[in-house]
Length: 146
Image (cartoon, rainbow, N blue to C red; front, side):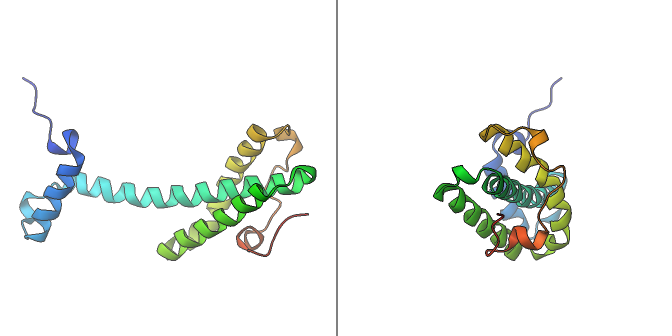
């Protein structure tokens, strides 16, 4: 005998609307608590992932800017500025992520080096093993490596 799939599994949007209605009306005993917990946890992970993504793209472009001087472009500069703005927004909307910033920067450096290797003739052995920029430099609108 097979179990009928839940609305959560078959129509996520309908499930969200159902849960909002149940919560709004105070029907706590009917709420799908297990899946609500899972979704809230997932939302938190998405914010951390967004932070790492912004840092990875930013670090990759800072490296390209530094190591490919003759190929510098307005596009790279625009990407550096955009990622710094996005990073600022993520941190303004989620101030509790600030303590995670240093760890995220270290993790994201690998993402940045991947980007450099994919988009330039440089290889991993051409790049510093650890991030050559301080966290303050990375997030500063005034900093561009020379």
